[in-house]
Image 1: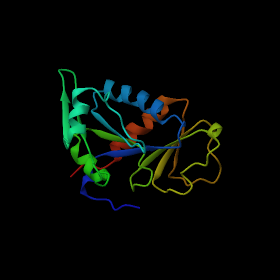
Image 2 (image 1 turned 90 degrees about the vertical axis):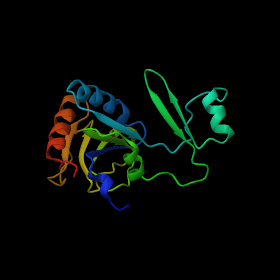
Image 3 (image 1 turned 60 degrees about the vertical axis):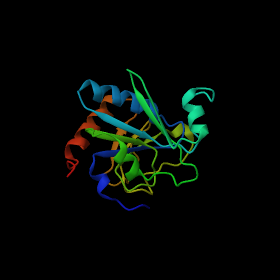
Image 4 (image 1 turned 120 degrees about the vertical axis):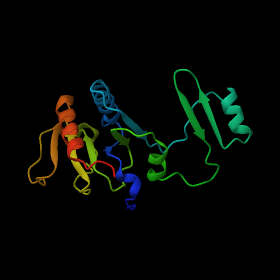
Length: 181
């Protein structure tokens, strides 16, 4: 497990679970509600796959292929910075957080092994074991089944089919999380 460093002073919550559990769908619902309440929320999505951002024949892709370390593509609507690692190690979560603008909350999709508070999304129909029994940093579970007996009292159990319940928990968790130094 990785060490926590000062970059984690930001309010950060991991959203974890197995593929197909509904993490992205839940995040979409939560983000819409949080934004409607005026909160600025960043998201970092981790992927184990190569990322393709533009067709290979586009100018920005051609410039990266020619050797640019970073290419920024900007418009009146958004911008993106595409950084080529070219064999360098994947940036740590600290490094990724440092590149993000300040926000009320940064939600992370993935990053299962990092020592941060996590909300696990779990569905029985996936047939995969949940993460919370082995990870004390899972502070809440949004599931499509009732709370099992014998769980630690500090583990919040939420109804995945009631996103307003998950939102209420998230807002309460955000309030009790210490503010960044």
